[in-house]
Amino acid sequence: MLTTDDIVPYCGVVLAREDAPAGLILLVQKLKKRISQELRAEWLSHDFDDVNDARFVTSFFYHLRPPHWAPNSEIRETNYAYFSVGVSNGYLVFHCSDNDVKEILLDLLEADSFPASKISREVLNYAFIEGRDVKTLWLHGIHNRTSVKADSKALTGSNLRMALDPSGDQSYSYNSLRGNVELLQRDRTFGVNLTESYLWLYRMNSWREFLIACDAITEILRKANGKTSSAPLETVSHPLSDLGVMGGAFDFSIVDPDTFGGTTFGAARISLLDKIALEYEFEPLHQVLPDRLIRLRVHHKQNGLRSYIGEVHAEPTLARGQLRFDATKVDIQRGQSGKLDEFARVFSHPPLVRVWYNSGHAITGGGCYEVSYKTSPFLGMYWSDFSQFDVLKEKPDRPANGAFLSNIGVAGEDSLFSWVYHALIRGTKAKRLSHLRMNTSTDWLMCDDGSGEISDFLHATTLDSHHHLTLIHVKAANSNKPSRLISVSAHDVVINQAIKNISSLNKANVVSALNARIPANSNKPTWSVQNGVIASTQASSFVNEISAWNAGRINFHVVIVQPHTLRSAFRNRGNTKQHSQLCTLLNSASHQIAGLGGTLTVVAAR
Image (tube, rainbow, N blue to C red; front, side):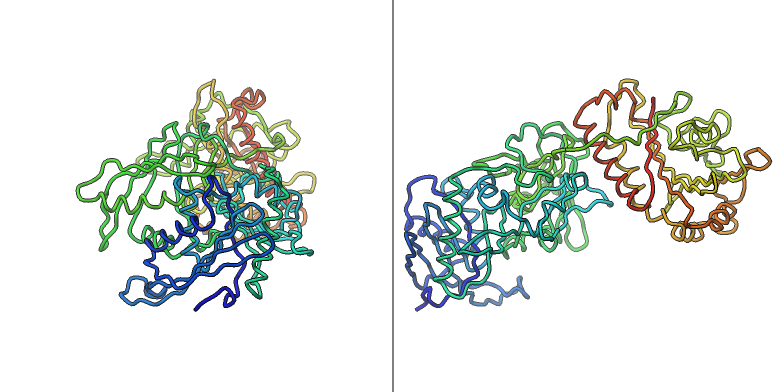
């Protein structure tokens, strides 16, 4: 007969509290009943243990399941498992031998009918994170998804409080971390998953050592005495307690269990994720509404065929401090209700989904977040006159045939590409842009617009024995109304493009890229100053010019032309959250460019 003396446990425990008087035996019975229903368990034995004033009940069982290497076969293997429930220092401790049992337990702890619930994130923050060194952080982005900023990342170090980037990391949240805690008279490395209220240490040598460790963990909770901390790591973002401020869901994804750090999924959830990845496609409805409802169009794939089966709408709510979704089916196609139900199961597990909102909020890691923007104003703005140009028109109109870029700068052409051409001819008195000119024989301009471009324009000049190479990126405004406010989305794409190509802030890289893009007979629009007059020339001549430069005497610049932002709106901080978001985005880009020795200027409308 199995007893706890046979166990050499890995110390991983779910911490909880009683919501109503229940008693240890009733909790064990409820958990046994759910395990029997879901795993068809056969019970083997029970054991009882005491340490100090703590008491634990451990139940052993086995169940049949398909092997991991053949999950859809009829083969079954016998899996032996156990769970243990204890009361220590006034808190409940749940310990499970494998993740399948832990997931059943976590689902129970979120059920209204179960007389216990997980310890809140804020209490765990105070007890285990506030003021302690953090060694590992698993961060999940709540910024809009972009190719130049990681969706998630893991950081390690001796004290990550000092290593977090106040600008770049404020758009991330954390749900799991590793740190140090004084336990059993010495510093120990621990890990905690705040959504699951799960804390882990290391493999114990015996069951008694495990019981002593559990007593020490709950003693830390007891000493915390219910105190809370909502933001123990000030740089990163933290969860919301009011979902009413969220609105405009525009993007949705389901996590990849292989890359979602700090969380270990059981077989059931991995099976669900695999099934959705293989058999379903989904997308948010194109019409973004101001409420917090998530609306998805769902397609099912089978035998190479893809068919629309209906919509799933899910509304996020908070219950007992935990995120939940109320999912409903809409526009169900004939005979497809069961398939929609199968897909909608993902909303039963909030940590599996990620959602982004126009309001600047995001759902990730089983919580709802808003970026807590802590930023300084972006000082690289330059205000210019666009009154004679169409700020909604990025490039010259494309004719039915012919090279439309050849129209850049011609009389009456009012696109932003032509604005760049004329602005360089005019020049500027602003010191930071004094190199942008077209009036000497050392001044060159090339339009690189097209697939795989380095930038829309490249400008080269030599000034006071120093060379200057400027990458100019152009983006049309989202609106031309005189009352338009700040728009982060109007800048997001063009900033991403600029950052994607910052490797070109290096002579060898930019020359190599241009040689690969520009054959000898290239017709890319290129201009130089010849005998005091601007004239068209070969793009290869532009490349030859910068190829001859001394790499040690080149100054690199990035200029973004985006006339959506008005000087009055920016200086008056019109819609303040958007102002903070935009400054954060621009400062982050500026820091990355400065890291390669370049400068960033954004040209907007005065």
